[in-house]
Length: 58
Image 1 (cartoon, one colour):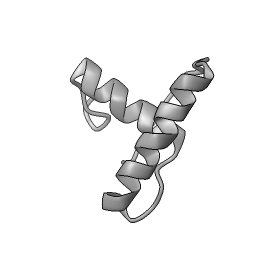
Image 2 (tube, helix red, strand yellow):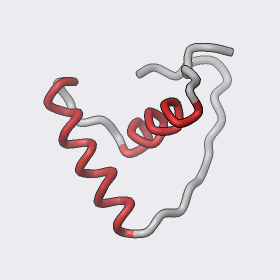
Image 3 (cartoon, rainbow, N blue to C red):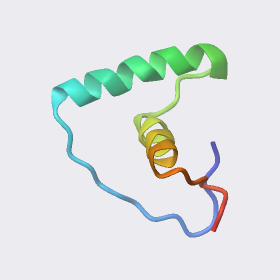
């Protein structure tokens, strides 16, 4: 996933159970992606799916 242009940063605090779930998803997705996505990538994907938007649309 590529984020270009003027992207903004969003800080999110989560507890250990969320981090564990994010890290588990990173491992799952790495098998199809060829590399391990970052925690930020996972949160970005989850938000895109929840909000039904794409990072490539303005």
